[in-house]
Image 1 (cartoon, rainbow, N blue to C red):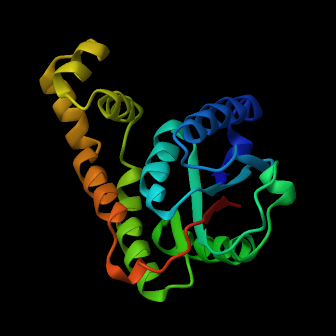
Image 2 (image 1 turned 135 degrees about the horizontal axis):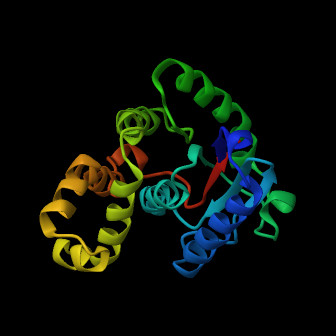
Image 3 (image 1 turned 90 degrees about the vertical axis):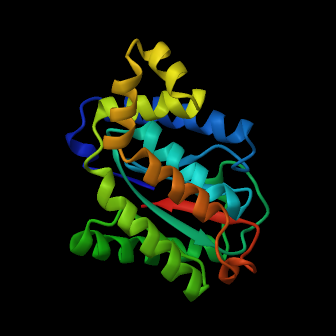
Length: 213
């Protein structure tokens, strides 16, 4: 994963580490990833997911928690070497070998259509479906404000608009408006759909690598 425009962000290293430490603890505790995310360069980090069904939830968490950073995210399926820590030093295998090529593809798509997410799994049918869905969703991300992301973040914790309103000190109509204008329902439906993808993905490896370069 890569933080686009990182050189223009004040105190980027501190903010990067703060966000990455938080999301690592969250995803390790949830058993979404097999070990902490590892920094591979100034604005890059990578990790290994425990299973492909975790991808939609992890992707949404990364978007939510790293805002206002713009992440370019590649998802690569394939075999990996036995899990050792840190992942950026010891991990290897097909998934990691695909990462650089996948990021180059994303850079090309980014320049043409504003894409922020790319899937390279070895399953052409699944890649077509996943990339089409997420490239459409990526077009919405640039329109979501900080206030709307804040509302989405709290609503994901409460799952109720009245509790979200109470926690944020807002009225329910404002919460509803922030969720609607922040495309929460489209985001929620995207996550649900991709957690239960078509049969084309049924034979994917149980381990996928998330890398943003």
